[in-house]
Image 1 (cartoon, helix red, strand yellow):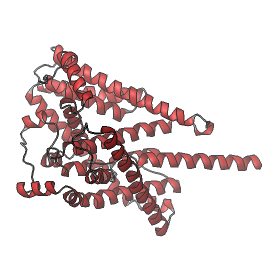
Image 2 (tube, rainbow, N blue to C red):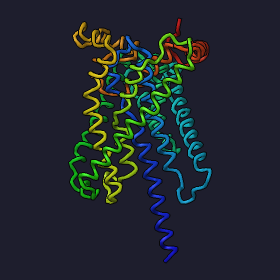
Image 3 (cartoon, rainbow, N blue to C red):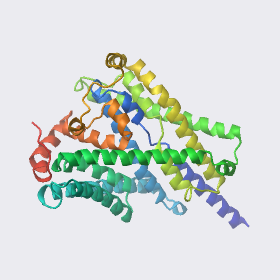
Image 4 (tube, rainbow, N blue to C red):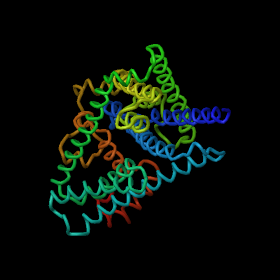
Length: 399
């Protein structure tokens, strides 16, 4: 009897730590697309880069860390479990990145050096799509992060392979992938919206209104405090380390915008929650059902409430942004031609709304960050890129 009680306590302890770790990862991913559509990249380029970069790193880290936690054998916990998690995280992140970059470079070389598919829009588009899908399949086959692999594969393709295809192929791929990405995101939110009305899932949770409201309040409070605990101290540390080398330090208003941008939760949180706590979208465990319903409520609340308040907040924090909107009638002054879209990967407000995809915007934005160096490391990267990489894999050289 005593052994049975000990076994029961161990199982409960294992479940507690599993749920605790998974919750931390699920709610660490952010959805910064709403804020990026409001911030002007031309007026505040550094703020835009910080918000975008922090959002991308959060999503990528959440997915990889989630996979690392799933691989832990909690029944054999030892003192070095933290080191094992860190090692698994670094392994998944590095190998997934290398695999994605390798396939992206291979695609660029094939399009540049081999005759196969050259000057044929159908073949060029098919080759890029199939190679991107191949990177995802290989990552899943090797038990790596498929999302991170295909993400970096897309970044490398946009930086090199993009310049090795015809202009019609560039326009076609831009619209095809933007459309597919928009459909995928729309499908996720439609699925979540319909699942939120699943009465059986709410009944399975077996939690009253007060309990559900308390859990929701605690989660929102932790999100608010967690963001503040990292954004403000790290911004102060960054300013102190930069010293006089930075002409534009991270001001307090910019810190508030960065803090606010990371409060919204989106598709990544939903996908991780359903992946961990449901089987084909169904769960009979009350604890797991409570986590799913809480995640749905948090995503809805942060997306609708925080998203609705984003523009007024940024107008208050960045007055020049409001004046720019009034002068332009609320529209961007940049060109929206297809040619400008792949010359300037950073999208304007209007273009970002049209694509509806943070993922597509992310690939173009990182490409622009590689092509427009700001700090010394970027200068050295540009020299290396111009001298060794672009002559082999393609792309216009910087001057």
